[in-house]
Image (cartoon, rainbow, N blue to C red):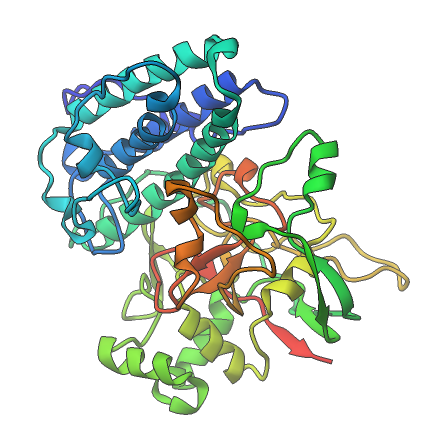
Length: 446
């Protein structure tokens, strides 16, 4: 990027690192770190610093924080005395780990004009050198650090998605509506008709199966996916595809945002306070949508995206349906390959569902778009599973302390790395959040 004077970054084609189990930990580390830089390749230096809202972070902060994780939780515990790259970075780039120490205020991350972008890139390069040296000397790595390194890689993949969604929100605030990438959208296609598939319910096992994963080579999971437990699900039916823009437009034209009967109390209060009347990135004409490719014509067949949990719930009520529980979603997703429109596809936006192959009368309806495209809101509160215990020490703050005032989302999005997702993955956001690629799959009672 000669126009910025920064260290040359990988081209966008390198984005979205796969982390298959066949790769060594050293290779996994190299691929994930390279993918983060590749996502930043289309940015100008000015884009790295700005913070568009308190929920979003500047690209520079993401680059530094994901590096801070490896220095704070791995390198300083790898044996012997450790000399931190910059002691001030421990304060500036801590996110929410109170056990580590004080941290810079989240809403003020955009005020950090220093350290410079180049200094942050130099920081990443230096920590990468130290990590590579550690990983190349396997006998030197304490066994207790191996799962933390793997956690750090998945933590960075989470921030890869946040990089994209935060950049999209930032660019949407610019009156020029700049594009992250200059790229033609793939040809649209008509979405298949909305159908429902029945599920019998009953006693079901939910959560990550650690024993089975161990047999498969130790598939990673976050602690909030544990322990596997049994719960009862009543019979239900789930839509075979995501709700489309055209279907959500019907809700808007039917004055869905003006009818309190469709909304939860907190949702209605939010609609009134924020003056919502359409999805966050739709134009006032309801004909265009801001995307990472810039302002484009609204595709009626693509999944509606960037909805809050309140909007998703209100649409479901309007449609005489409801949001699924996270347990219903997980049962429906069981056994389905985790393939779909992920960041590796570089479409940068949700795509219409593909028509399934013709099925015989004895075959069940296929579940489409279960993975990728948009995160799917559920009606489930983000709460601990029975018997959940957070990890000891600072890393115990990773998930457990956020188990309040959040709803669970499932399935991943077009900004999620494919290797980061699995059927038991539990994402979570406050129901008012709209800047993530989040959408709707309808459910109904039987």
